[in-house]
Image (cartoon, rainbow, N blue to C red; front, side, top):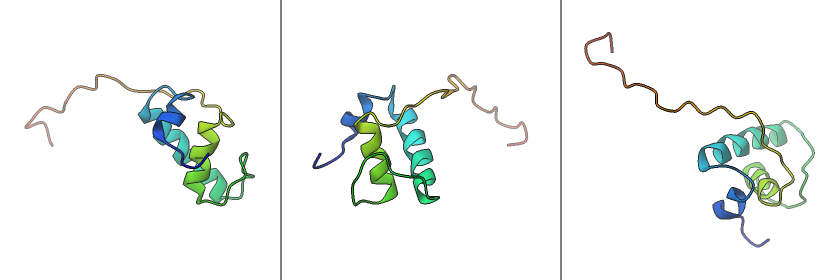
Length: 77
């Protein structure tokens, strides 16, 4: 894989929101010493994205809060 693209990753993840959170979490794991599941000589974030793109990382239990009401003006904000 020459370049990892968002489209490659979205084949394994529901949406971009989930992708960002999963990649960040996996990159933090790699930075703390976790073994890479896909061999490449890149930064932790690129390695995390490559792992997602090739299906080596499974994303589970992501909660997305939809339809959060906007804060009303004059209520302490």
